[in-house]
Image (cartoon, rainbow, N blue to C red; front, side):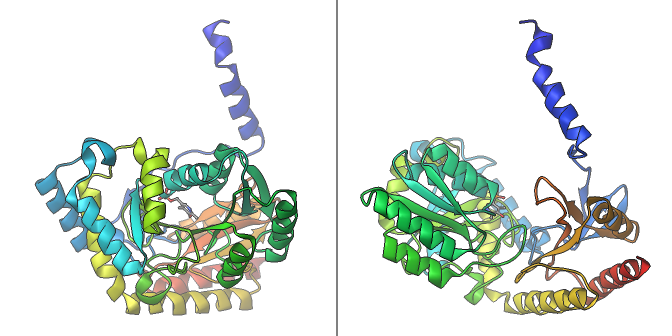
Length: 392
Ligand SMILES: *Cc1c(COP(=O)(O)O)cnc(C)c1O
């Protein structure tokens, strides 16, 4: 084959995307001094599209501790944890995190995506069954596919459906390992799962329970420790530091035995360079701050409820959102894009989420709120939407 032929698929697939109006490009942005803003084309826009729920990404303590750790320990860890990259700072952070969460043990991972995809493939194998919610994050789905387990997807938050699937899988072979995988707060719809019922089902059917707490850690639960339980009823709890913690990286909370297992058998932990010291420093600082941010959490939750209520009163559909993630479901793709353009013109950065990410005719503006926003910003945003909804 000529070199030209071997690249034909690139052109074909990209052309296909463009034809369907689904071609993605990277937007050029700059961070602003204030975490409530983002800079685009030299304009400061209020950022309604970030996961920096507590505004920690620009916090002086995180920046200072990152710099301090870089000075003291270097810019990189230079090896995987099992080789020569396991410093006392990694170990101490895991101990502090376990204490904060009330978990038996914690193991750091380099990102939530990496953790999810490798963890599921470690815990499940060809003879296992993995049950995942239909709206599970892509990283969880990748993990399930990589494991080569039999994959059963239950309707979104439909635990009756999950129960039926568990029942029929159990009848086929009782000795096979199974794993229930879901999120506590769903990243696209902002709704939450029924954790008590999930624990009951996992207990009844002897399934491992894997809970992705990415959007809850820092924001929900006592002292911001998230929504997932740490009493052993969930076998794996995944959290990330890229969202409310304002930095980067991820962790798993589990039993000591599970941690030993992962250190021995999880490729995405074993064969990767340990998180660099500046990142460990930033996480360490965030962990110092997060338990004390009750006021910020209350502001965020109160604001979220009021925001949703106002939108619903104006006639906007916010789905089943029950968190700081609020989809404003417009339906039509063109109208959704138009609204985000109007919002940007008036100083607000939002993202239109369109098919194939969401089903046809459910295009939406996905809004994420932060305690760093001001009441005035929220009011202005709402009045713009009010005006636009009266237009049609
Ligand atoms: C963001 C996200 C992840 C990925 O975490 P990163 O640390 O950003 O890689 C995993 N699961 C869910 C539900 C997420 O929203």
